[in-house]
Image (cartoon, rainbow, N blue to C red; front, side, top):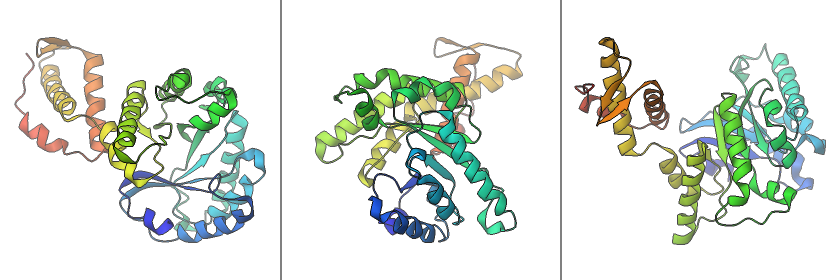
Length: 298
């Protein structure tokens, strides 16, 4: 299973030491993962992360001291983050280990290290503002099943029971300039109904402000990447707006008209964000820019 993950073309692969490992296999799992992550990196995976056990279990320290011996880890996913202290504990341990590795360049200790918090409870939602201020935090993930358990909610296809929590997470991540805002897992993925459910969840999460979604099976990856990448029509619009804006600025114009609508700074900002997301997704922005290089502000 670990070796199969190396063939994925994804932004992030998170290797799990928490729920997918039974208590009697934790030590074995840590050691296997450490050895696996000593292999040379594969270029098709942008970020390799490890989900450790929750701080409250008392297992997090052993997870960190073992797996951080491997050189090819970019991020630690911290589950059940209820308060900033949960993240600070992990951050302190990571920084201490990295400090001891300063004389071991193979460990890449000079590379910025990321923490990603799993938001799984009502207490976490109420603590988002302080959680987001912890150093090295780079993203938030919504863990819907544990959140539903905490609040005794019944998950429905509409996901309306999670609307407040999802909106709060996406808003907090944006307010604190976190890179990643990852939406809940879709448990359906087989057959036409499963794929349709996944696509609808992706659209809903994207429209709430999330910029990615957890996948639990490789078959989900294509749909998630397609929905969260800019739509081709939106990307063409964004490229044309940014080209026209550059020419308008050269003419000393702060606003201009495009396709009969006024374009000002907030609209240009949105267009630039779309182009940036397209580039991050590996889309061919250059060809579209060449096509519309003569676009003029109206």
